[in-house]
Image (cartoon, rainbow, N blue to C red; front, top):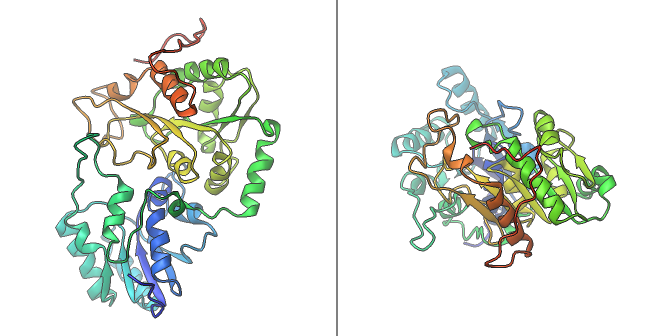
Length: 374
């Protein structure tokens, strides 16, 4: 589809926080290309958790959107819905872009009634495909369709969002954001650098601080000239300190110090990112940094994996996979805690291009941290 310069107002409906916004970047780029002269407003929810930054903190001054409307996800409050409908009508969008997660036909129809009848929007892109969207499985890899590729299918009427092209993930980081990242990294200078963000807001995704400590100690022994940068929310600082307590090389703890976009600028300087299934994982992928991830099987394999071919995702598909639990008590996170530091270490070697096939480098284990959570 050719760019439509006649459209001057576009409303984009996408809920979520850091990861949900980042995986939609190819879609945001396509929308900009399709409606280059339009004012693009994002209708989204604002965060309810300190570790889940709002979409505005991800998109920043990229120009992909020009403003935001607030929506309380799941609300049935008539007054709030009336307020929202009034605000949308006042904006007078000519096009609604429906970039929502997989929803039932009933939910999609309810949304369409609100936007068409309540808000007066006639043209909608993405909603018809959303109600029919079922994640396909690649018969070769056994992976389900990624969220980024599913969103790209919703936008096919506008053209090809092409999530496999790294240019469509461009956050358009500013010179000031890059400068802030360089200043924050200070002591690491121009050293080769590994980034690690072990924290997570979800118990079911927590690999365990002892596992991270074992892995980082072994990596420091294997790559003694590398520096370490720790990233995450302020609430992750103490866990990051503990995880890196055996790292003897230079390190910087930036938990709580940077915005998500400044964190992306830091990740762009790293050789590797280590962490759980998280928003920073997607930021690393967006800036082209390989990620090595201890991935919980709470979700379907592939849906939230970082897009790209350079990443190493360690995912154990246990019988209870796809449970979608935020807190795993009965199974004691067996999918995640069955992942060993040795597996992650070998994955790091692969990602860094230093692994010799058929030869497994043994972990360096000190007496103080040889106990693992399993």
